[in-house]
Image (cartoon, rainbow over all chains, first blue to last red; front, side):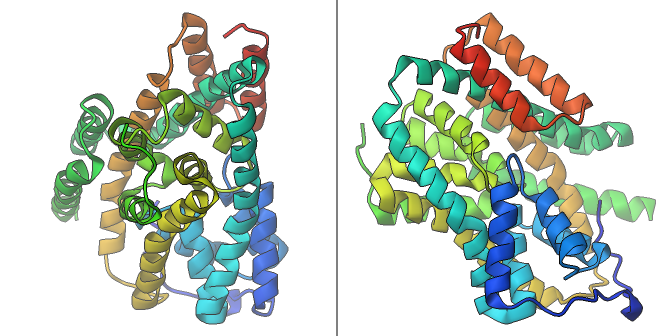
Length: 198
Length: 176
């Protein structure tokens, strides 16, 4: 998973397409955002690597790995880092506006509709059904991420995972406090384990 | 009832969460729930669960759920402030880190930090699932639906949108 270490870059491997302009950045990110039901990442990879050839697959993986280990919505981070790489801060803003602007309009419209019609009995039942399914999806994502940890049989990682789940999910402790303890513990443990196995 | 929040309060709340959202917006849901539902009563448990459902049904990144919560809390301006607050600090951090690291880093630390954060982010997502599952009165049928969807999505490559629509149809029919 850690793709950041792959730093040697073959110049012949460079993408062929010229760097995108501001409006191109906006349109490309708006398109992938609106195509992205249940996750934009797949569409981002397709558009950036395959369709526009703005990055090689390896460059994309590196950029995404960077955005993944930082906090915040990963794909939003990606849009900013990607836009800035080609067009500086204006590029970052163009890509971000494309990614977030159109869905924000749609979601806000839905929010207005919900505020007016949310109490209608049929809509109540539909939304309840959708949310039960959506919770199932959330568990499946967590489960898919868990599999590699189970295969590695890493007791420290699994212990921390369970501790965070209990502290935040069951005891409902404030997340900043929990992470203030868990993040240093996890980084320390990972560092020590890697040094021992290295 | 604490009542409607100020826009400044919303901005501070979501900007802080932005930097604690390890593994994306869904990992921040427990904290959003704690602040928006439990502490401040900006919305009810039911509205929170509905916001999650609507966000999953909508196109765009998962983070758009904060726009729904911001709207419930403080109207149109609330939706905008919550979204920018949730995205701004982490996006700025990502920009700065990408500038500092450059393209070729030989440091082991990014890899170590990433590996260290993965289990925490899984724990947070599972906690999100639990909190949402407890957010509304649940029948045995609805728990079964959640479990079936979890298994189907984990073992098959089925498009999640179909599973959400199936949930909506079962809900409309009054089965779950």
